[in-house]
Length: 101
Image (cartoon, rainbow, N blue to C red; front, side):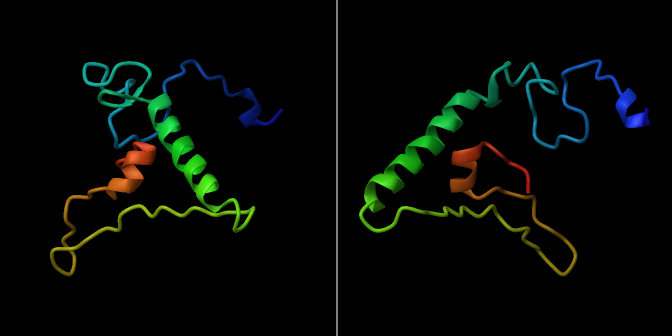
Protein backbone atom coordinates (compact mmCIF):
# COMPACT_ATOMS: atom_id res chain seq x y z
CA UNK A 1 0.00 0.00 0.00
CA UNK A 2 1.10 3.54 -0.74
CA UNK A 3 0.93 6.20 1.97
CA UNK A 4 -1.69 8.05 -0.05
CA UNK A 5 -3.92 4.95 0.10
CA UNK A 6 -3.88 5.11 3.90
CA UNK A 7 -5.13 8.67 4.24
CA UNK A 8 -8.39 8.93 6.11
CA UNK A 9 -10.46 12.07 5.93
CA UNK A 10 -11.79 12.75 9.42
CA UNK A 11 -13.78 15.83 8.49
CA UNK A 12 -15.76 17.24 5.60
CA UNK A 13 -14.34 20.70 6.26
CA UNK A 14 -12.18 21.67 3.26
CA UNK A 15 -8.45 21.50 3.88
CA UNK A 16 -5.99 24.12 2.71
CA UNK A 17 -5.98 27.86 2.63
CA UNK A 18 -9.30 29.52 2.00
CA UNK A 19 -8.99 33.27 1.55
CA UNK A 20 -12.70 33.77 1.01
CA UNK A 21 -14.95 33.30 4.06
CA UNK A 22 -17.02 30.10 3.94
CA UNK A 23 -19.65 28.51 6.15
CA UNK A 24 -16.83 26.36 7.60
CA UNK A 25 -14.49 29.22 8.45
CA UNK A 26 -17.04 31.94 9.32
CA UNK A 27 -20.31 30.25 10.38
CA UNK A 28 -21.39 33.45 12.16
CA UNK A 29 -21.36 35.29 8.79
CA UNK A 30 -22.25 32.66 6.20
CA UNK A 31 -24.83 29.97 6.99
CA UNK A 32 -24.44 26.45 5.65
CA UNK A 33 -25.52 26.25 1.99
CA UNK A 34 -24.58 29.82 1.18
CA UNK A 35 -21.53 30.62 -0.89
CA UNK A 36 -21.51 34.31 -0.02
CA UNK A 37 -23.52 36.18 2.58
CA UNK A 38 -27.19 35.87 1.63
CA UNK A 39 -26.68 33.99 -1.65
CA UNK A 40 -26.89 30.21 -1.94
CA UNK A 41 -24.82 27.95 -4.14
CA UNK A 42 -28.03 27.13 -6.00
CA UNK A 43 -28.58 30.83 -6.81
CA UNK A 44 -25.14 31.05 -8.45
CA UNK A 45 -25.87 27.88 -10.42
CA UNK A 46 -29.21 29.32 -11.59
CA UNK A 47 -27.48 32.53 -12.71
CA UNK A 48 -25.00 30.56 -14.82
CA UNK A 49 -27.76 28.33 -16.22
CA UNK A 50 -29.84 31.40 -17.13
CA UNK A 51 -26.92 33.02 -18.93
CA UNK A 52 -26.21 29.85 -20.91
CA UNK A 53 -29.89 29.44 -21.82
CA UNK A 54 -30.06 33.00 -23.13
CA UNK A 55 -26.81 32.56 -25.04
CA UNK A 56 -28.07 29.39 -26.72
CA UNK A 57 -31.49 30.92 -27.39
CA UNK A 58 -30.02 34.01 -29.07
CA UNK A 59 -27.43 32.19 -31.13
CA UNK A 60 -28.95 28.81 -31.99
CA UNK A 61 -29.45 29.84 -35.61
CA UNK A 62 -25.76 30.79 -35.93
CA UNK A 63 -23.71 27.91 -34.47
CA UNK A 64 -24.23 24.81 -32.38
CA UNK A 65 -20.97 25.03 -30.39
CA UNK A 66 -20.03 27.87 -28.06
CA UNK A 67 -17.31 28.94 -25.68
CA UNK A 68 -18.10 31.53 -23.05
CA UNK A 69 -15.13 33.28 -21.46
CA UNK A 70 -15.69 35.50 -18.44
CA UNK A 71 -12.38 36.85 -17.19
CA UNK A 72 -11.58 37.31 -13.54
CA UNK A 73 -9.96 40.56 -12.45
CA UNK A 74 -6.23 41.14 -12.75
CA UNK A 75 -4.01 42.24 -9.92
CA UNK A 76 -3.54 46.02 -10.05
CA UNK A 77 -0.54 47.90 -8.67
CA UNK A 78 -0.27 51.32 -7.00
CA UNK A 79 3.42 51.40 -7.77
CA UNK A 80 6.07 49.00 -9.00
CA UNK A 81 5.73 46.50 -6.12
CA UNK A 82 2.71 47.66 -4.10
CA UNK A 83 -0.59 46.02 -5.15
CA UNK A 84 -4.05 47.39 -4.54
CA UNK A 85 -6.42 45.27 -2.47
CA UNK A 86 -7.85 42.73 -4.92
CA UNK A 87 -11.38 43.32 -6.19
CA UNK A 88 -12.96 40.62 -8.32
CA UNK A 89 -14.54 41.42 -11.70
CA UNK A 90 -18.24 42.13 -11.02
CA UNK A 91 -19.55 39.87 -13.80
CA UNK A 92 -17.31 36.97 -12.72
CA UNK A 93 -18.38 37.42 -9.09
CA UNK A 94 -22.08 37.62 -10.04
CA UNK A 95 -21.89 34.27 -11.85
CA UNK A 96 -19.53 32.39 -9.53
CA UNK A 97 -19.47 33.99 -6.08
CA UNK A 98 -15.68 33.77 -6.17
CA UNK A 99 -13.87 36.72 -4.60
CA UNK A 100 -10.35 35.29 -4.90
CA UNK A 101 -7.82 36.11 -7.64
